[in-house]
Length: 344
Image 1 (tube, one colour):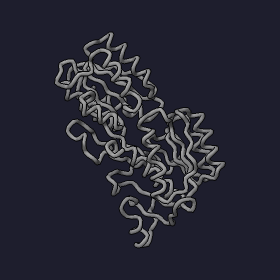
Image 2 (tube, helix red, strand yellow):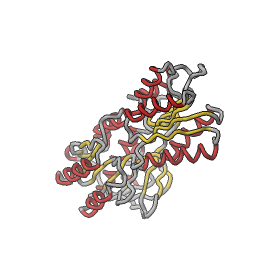
Image 3 (cartoon, one colour):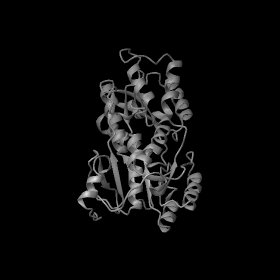
Image 4 (spheres, helix red, strand yellow):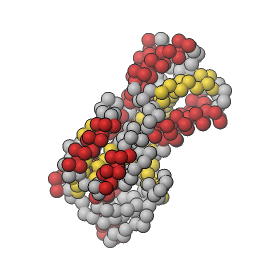
């Protein structure tokens, strides 16, 4: 895509927090007189990660001068998301931010919104089909690779690992699972991996862990693809079995997670888990809203590095994705104030 040109003064006004690899035209406002209205559907309210994201949303909208409709919540159900999108459209939404957890079933809704001239920004997930203005997410394959390398090195390339896979109907669940499996096969063939599909549900992970520990009491590694739903039930099972011990204890089970929520960071400090890959809940909210506003203002963007430490990539057919950084957090850097989990 070609970038639109702005005057130097307007580009300067967009500098700092609101600058990217492209600038476009359009003025910003505040409150009810701001850009919009912009609609948003939040994916669920039973996860610490998503609840943190939701808390950031109104403040980020205010900072950006966005007139935000009352957000809806689809509670992890695609049929509810479809109905919520229709409701937001009927309320006059000029753009919609959503995070479809079933990335295959949302295509028809995206097509309908596109025909109605309502651009969609998806956050955290990339739909399998359908038009999006921008996808805001981190490199989820890197999540799986970082988790694999951390566990592989901690276990010395030998042992047994249980993996709580996210929903495989989600691109995130697929990306993390495929990357973790490929890395283990290539770099740590001496490690046995027990893949446990969970549909992002904590009780399923808890049941799987209990069963596997009964069958294989020598399991010495766990990969949780979402700490927001898996952390509490996992720690509960380990505590019941007297396996919640520090890394210096031979019975310690090395655990790496994904999310970067405050409870994960506290668990790292306590030695209950060993690492997590931080999903930037604050940046997800900020940049999803930024792009929704940009869509209303008819700005365009191009692949390339941004000035907020991310990269916009073309994931095929001209579909753009802003891949935000997702650092590995361990005992060594857990107190870094730059992590959003240390800011709330």
